[in-house]
Amino acid sequence: MSDNNHLCLLGLIFLSSLLTGVSGVDDAHVFISSGEDVRLPCNNALQDCTSTDWLYNNRHSNSTVELIGLGIKKRDTERHERLSLGSNCSLNIRNISTEDSGLYRCQQYVKYRQQGPDAGVYLHVLHVSSSHTEISSGLSVTLFCQLYSYPRVSCDDWIRSERIDLFWVNQTGVKSDSRYQISSSSGHCIISLNKTLLNEDDNREWRCEVTQRDHVKTSVTYTVKSSAEADSTTAVNKHVIKVILIIVEFAVFAAPTVILLQIICARKAERKDSQQPAEIDINTIIE
Image (tube, rainbow, N blue to C red; front, side, top):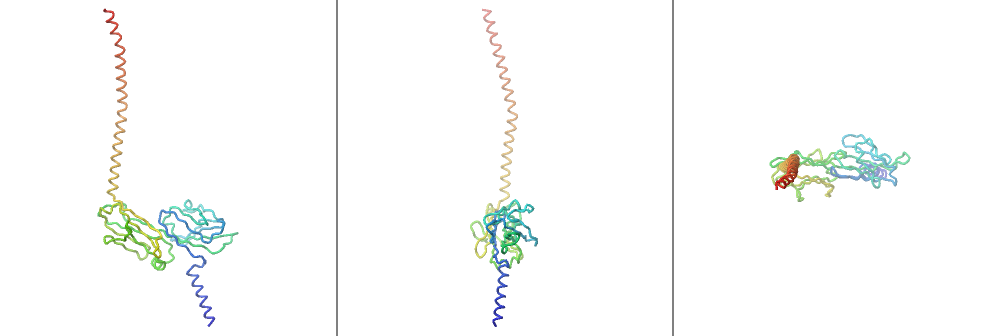
């Protein structure tokens, strides 16, 4: 009986290691919106970051890319200019894109031997896009809000297990009314907002939020800009430029004309001054 209990205990330990990760270090989950800067923690850092390696696995392949080697950035990576090491050997990435989502692993090496387990960080990137670039009243528009993640499991399973939720709210924080239709994808972490625009929708803000266990992790705001307003602004700008060009052309033409008139007037004045003394002398002689 004791042997059976012992086997059960070993099974529970093994199952627990699978659920928490064989590394023995809890993986971190970081949520960020595209275009922002992010800091990825290194939960196994030593005092000296010259022992730190950062590795990356993207969501498209199983290949591993070394970003940081013993505290030094690798120059042959696409994101080289956007990377830096922060405090506690954290990895800082500027101007996040959807391609940056994936699994990051922090490792420590001393004398070519790894010290301790990997510290994993899953980076999830929230991104919003529109079905139309030019927006006007009466147009049916779809806004796509997608959460890019490392595909360890399907999105549906991950959302259920981690209590992840994606939803759209308006600028007052209220979810969509009857005029707006929200649909979700079963195979991807994506939620769509479908709407037919009215005049009052101009400059209206919509926000896509992602929550985990009812806590907001990150959000992206999309502002509806009517193309009519943009066209009006462009027309005004063109009119102003046209007026400026006319003024410049007039100034270029008028300047030589004014100078020429000044020269003519000056010469006439000189002739008049030169003739005046001669007439006085003749009258004096006659007298």
